Image (cartoon, rainbow, N blue to C red):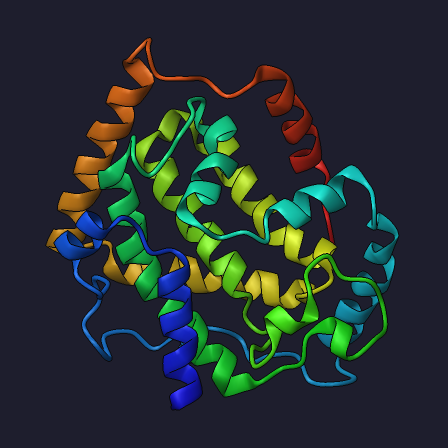
Length: 262
């Protein structure tokens, strides 16, 4: 239980926002304790030797060839989970330069929802205790192994967070949903490229985020925060003074996002 509490707390602190946003939202998500059980929804982690585990090992071996490619560089970028990094990562997809300071209501929505999705991810990680791919087979990874001590493979917490952000941003800018969700998919696949999560763990992270967000979607506080975020993002997009991300960089990113991994 101590490991579980640490895992959830670490994820929340990683995506913590400004002091004012933390004070306004409080250190909690939207779901009441015990309101949702990810272990009843998420498929069991692959077992050594079964078809899913064999596929994971095959994909890990094949994707080691991506080391030092542009896709590897994107995966390395996607390791970072600070709010400013996450907003930057999705700026091209949204079509404007996003920052937590420019969109505090959206940042608050993401922080609170990510508390819920991250907590469910931590529960499953601790329950299954599955080793990461580089702990099973040798191969280069794009993140220092020391940063991953005490944390397990299934489901991917990075993917859970990335899909949480993508889903919520897509709801604030539905006309950009295709690009936003594609970036969210690629954000999770970066963990495969990086060599620190198996393909099945990335799939599990997306399911964890989607299922948890579904469980909270009728919460009145969540709906109010979502509505406020939609107004905020719409205003930013309509404001001619809002900076736009670099078009050339966005084109390069789009080409990398279009690559399918796994």
